[in-house]
Length: 210
Image 1: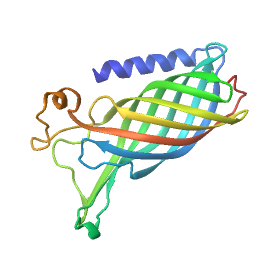
Image 2: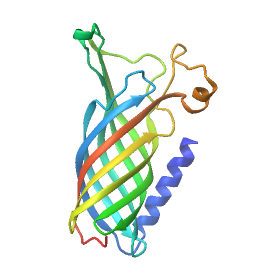
Image 3: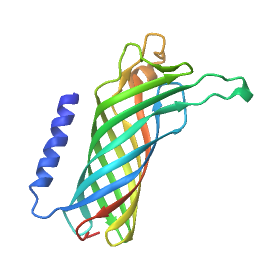
């Protein structure tokens, strides 16, 4: 299944690159992330987003866009000694990510939905004693997910973007002791999933249509 998702995304990128008009741009922002299924809640891990995009108009109010950027994901569990909680854990995940999305433009706002694939470059995990290895099963080399978001275009070629993203396929299977027993969890919650809130600035190098 992962192979087919990757083929679909690459075909969409190739189709966009063959379009007659495309507008390149740059991306810089922050990612607030967590890993659903790890028993630690909250978007407490901050990471960098840096890369580029290509946008192509497909109508008066619509466009397609693909992006390629470096992004830091993971999660962070800080101790709370005042509550008797001394447990801590940090997971740093470094990816190269390629989203493909469709955008609808309305006045100064852009609404978007799409799919993404990310290749894991490296990861590090830390417990209270320092750097540690994640035991079997390991983090998957690929992260396949979906996204929704919107942008406010505050200048002709510049916008502020907010995006909610989530893995659609687990990046790590549950260990035997982690697995949930309810049928709902067995169907829809089969491991660890990256979930993220992206905040970024985008600048088009060429004039935008929306």
